[in-house]
Length: 200
Image (cartoon, rainbow, N blue to C red; front, side):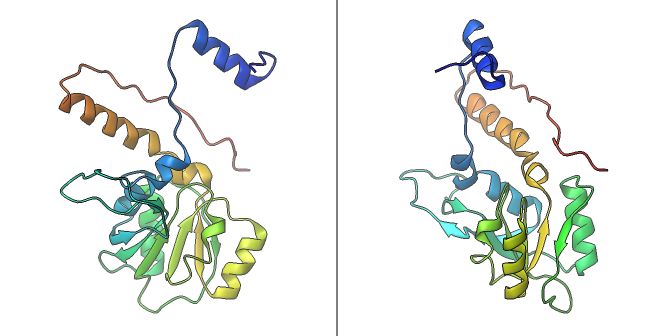
């Protein structure tokens, strides 16, 4: 049912009129072996990163010589030595984040060593991330924040948009590389969008 009186219906109507095909990926891109959380782990300098919540592997998928396990989130060891403040500054710069909501945990002296990440809304994975020194995610609600406090887990909430805004760029790279490998001429444009939440 396409309801043109609603924003989504109007968008679908335009796409149909212009004969534009649409492929939507969300949680499947989050879970993908080389998807959003894999790239977040790379950008945030994590090594030996594995899923917080593993899912069934995709048969035959091998990239870069080996295929990491698919699943939600990532947990890895931080490359290099950062104090807590240094790593916070690095994360904000790497992801171009302005403000970060922080749930204070039992900070290890010398800075974080084991870090968990989950793009988007990752509050439901706080229990899975409790073996980390630090959990980086978005959209943490009040009760998840209380759980993190009870567990002594430091959580940095970068916002849903903040943890996912580079996803389109990363996906564009994958599509462009696949087109090149298949000798297909393809132009990949990235739509611009902004965080719907304004800072007051």
